[in-house]
Picture 1 (tube, helix red, strand yellow):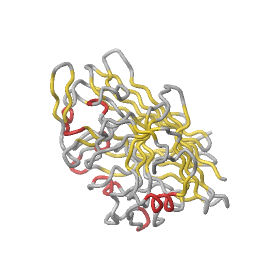
Picture 2 (picture 1 turned 90 degrees about the horizontal axis):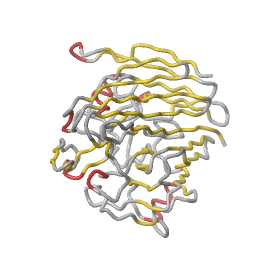
Picture 3 (picture 1 turned 180 degrees about the vertical axis):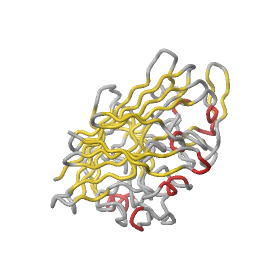
Picture 4 (picture 1 turned 60 degrees about the vertical axis):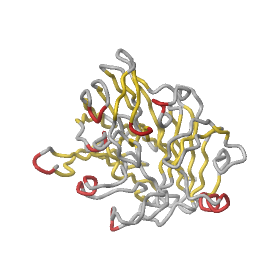
Length: 342
């Protein structure tokens, strides 16, 4: 069984509220999650010697999360990933969103779900966060009620996302944790071995918006169906890193998504999800300017993300999996992060 403890993490400026931290602990994992952005701030996993290390990038104090930073550990929405030119048309009406990533809208806009205080409820083996996103928030139509639930069972952290809308609106929720299985603060992820169970990926333009093509991975740098060592793989294909959507099985059931192994520590992360895609991001925009936990700095390629989600810009690409949530329907997706030792 997992235990749950609750503590104050910090106070928001000008009396905007208190951020709480919830620590979920089992015999295998210890996870800290705060009510600001439903953010995972620490995740301790044992290595093959039984020594625990924190394997997610982030900050020890609330101030770190309030500065400009790359969504460390947060839940992002109303729509994760990029929407081309920050516009979409729904029922004949054009909606304009904040432009916050080149010419595009990214991760819900200027003040997305990562930059708000959520209401927590402690569960026997986890914590559920809820909030109401008002009609028109960041340009999105309709009121959206959202619940994000973290539960811990042994070595498995489960995240369930639910939402209900008062008007038809696009919804795409994910968690944006950056992992380094050698321990946060390790200089890079080149010695990690990665597998992604995807036969296709989405090529992108220079602003990282999918071109619309669903391309086979066969014979490309994106063929990660058999394990590859990341550093060698990037060198072999002469690529700067990954920030791409991999197309998973179209099943609504739980399916295997990815596995990452770190030979040095023996730590293994397996990801399962009900989502149709995963954005594999290798931290190419990290630049060493942010100081994280225990004085660590986070240079390029010092963490990786496996953001299970719908495909980017799906609201503008009719042949992508549907991203619209209508009144009377429920958005309900789950992702499992399972840690073990090899």
